[in-house]
Structures are given as C-alpha cells and as structure tokens.
Length: 382
Image (tube, rainbow, N blue to C red; front, side, top):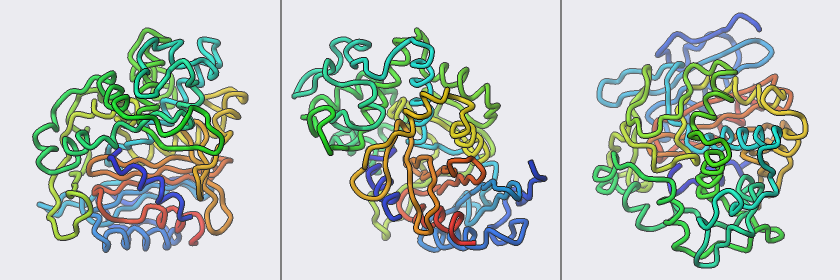
C-alpha cells in the first residue's frame, strides 16, 4: 500500500484434484504440468522487467499449480518458494469489508450508519464531516475522504530511502493516520454522483468501526471470523510485528521508479502505518482459498454478498464493490478480487465468480512488472 496505490488500481484498468505443485524454490519453467505456459512466460517477463522474483499459485478444474520465477534474495540468489509469506497490502481491504458485512448480517451495524455514529467527532475538519459519510461509502471509496498516504510528509517518511530507514520501526496509531488525512480537504462531497477516489483512510476508519462495534481489535475479528474458519494457516494480522513468518523472501524497494538506483531491502517494517488499509500477511494458497470461499458464499449470507458485489465505476476499466474489484479481461472472462501494493511487495489475487479458477501471486519488488499481464495470461492465455 504505497502512496502510489493508485498505480495498482491503474494497472487493473489495462484490462479436489491431486495438486500439481512445483517443488519449493523451483523456477517458473520447472513447474509441474503442461499448461499455464502463458502464465509462466508472463512471470518471466516481469523478472526481465526488473522484478527480483515472483511466486504464484493457481487453482482450476485440473487442480493446483504453483511456480516461481527469479529470486527471493538478491544477495544469495536463493529462489522464491511457492509457500512464501508476503505482505498483501490493500488485499487487506477485502478482509475488513467481509467483517463489516458479517456485522451487518448479525444486526450489529448497518451500512447506512454514518461514520460519526460509531466514531463520534473523529472525522471533522477541512470540509470532512463524519455525520454525512456512510459505512458503505467507506467500503466502496465514494466517501471523498482524503487518502492519507498521498500526504507529502507521509510520503517522505516511508517512501524515500532516507525516510524509510529512519521510520521503518515506528508505531503509528490509526487515529494519527486519520488526522493526516483530515489536514487536507476532501476530494468531493460524500456520495457525489459519478465520483470515486481510492483512499486508504476509508479502511483505517472501517477497521476502527469494527473495533468500536465489537470491543475487540479488528485483527482479532479478522482472525476469528475469517482466518480460523477457513484454516488460513499462513495468514495473519501482524499489528506491530516487523518480521515475516518463514518461509519468506526478501522484499525490495527503489526510490520512486528510478531504474538507475539499486534496490534496498525493506523486508522488515512496522505495518501499523497501514492498519486496516493494508497490513495483512498471507501466501498464495491462502489468498486463493479466501477469495474462492468468499465468492462461494461461505463467509457471507447472500444479501451481504450481493451488497459486496454491487459495484460503482472506478473511472475506466474495473468496477469497485465493497472491498472487491470486478475486472473483465480482454478475452471476456470476468474475475473478482483485489490487488495490493506496499513497500517491496506487489500482490494480485483474483477468482472467477463461480470460484472454479483462481490465481494469487506476488512480486517481491515495488518498481517494475505488469501484474495484470500475469492475470491476463492465466485466464486468457492457455
């Protein structure tokens, strides 16, 4: 969930069988099976474009397929593993939206509640007014609330090399992140017709609503409502934990997108700077399981799933539901899911609506690679 998370959204605009799984650390070309060739090629193209390494897992009617390309450690040359844990960035938003919708199904809250109903007095100033913003508008990014990661000082603190190394272990309170956003004017009036802007602040607020409504940390609610029921063994909400569980690869960043600058290691960082907007850690297997279960109705009643999949236009290309993106690919296949970008990590996880074909993959670098080319190759290439 870099300040350039909009770039991830823009990229989206371009458009129980025995598993056949590559051995840990295998290169993309050594993946078991005779298909997914276009996907392997797209992964190799991402590496050729500068991504240090890619790990991917797909599941379809033939079973489960995993492969890697490139390396997980630029210093040692160690390959990536299909079982790598990684930071999923804004994919966290789907987990948060799922919990909010579960609370609605239970009668604890309503999507038509205002933010101020649950967080009185928090969202006010510079034209922001929490009494006029609904929870639904938070979840589908039609609130107009300023995106705190677009703040220039925040950018200098976390997305320049010097700032990152100075602040990488700092703990940030979610209310502090909201205050950063409120120092700016809103993008537009809440729910203004035809208006949509991606804002990480929306999901910091949504996570705070979960905490107020349940009396428990939002991460605990995600764990007991989603992670444990689905047995997502690689998925966690780390809070302030700076390390990645093993196995994992190193994560690399560059200042901006300057190809001439050497990458620097950003594996260890305090994810509190993202809170409910992007802190979850997972792996490709778990992400496939999560989105397949979600679209199959295992996590939400039909009424809430219908609400989640009711979309608004994002401008061009995809549409956005409640923490869920809908993308129709060039070959006519429609997939649902989300993407996520954070320091040193770019992740995509999508599935067809019937849940029969899913893909999740991760780049361990944040300056290169076309994630949508990998998605297009998997669903349209073979």
